[in-house]
Image (cartoon, rainbow, N blue to C red; front, side, top):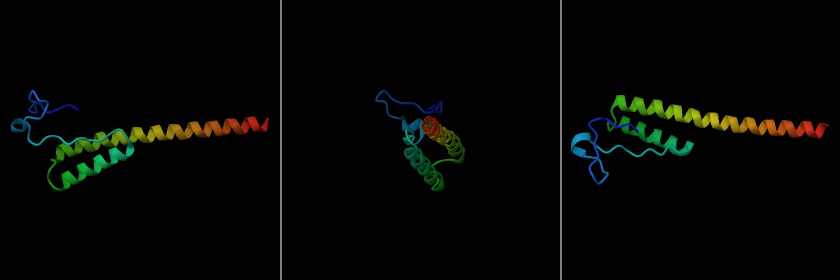
Length: 94
């Protein structure tokens, strides 16, 4: 994730709170479920005022694209299964 130029890490790998404000939350993005939960967490943070609108828009855009890729991946797997079934049916009809 690209960071704001004012956000810096110290030597221990933690965020320097004096320059960047609160530490960014960790986003689970490896599965549809973890991505959905991350989006829900960001919505809650925005709703409670813990996340500013401009950053919320960026996260929403990025997560929306990620979820679209998950959907495409699922659609491709379904298409492969359908093709396999059609091929087997054609072989049975011979």
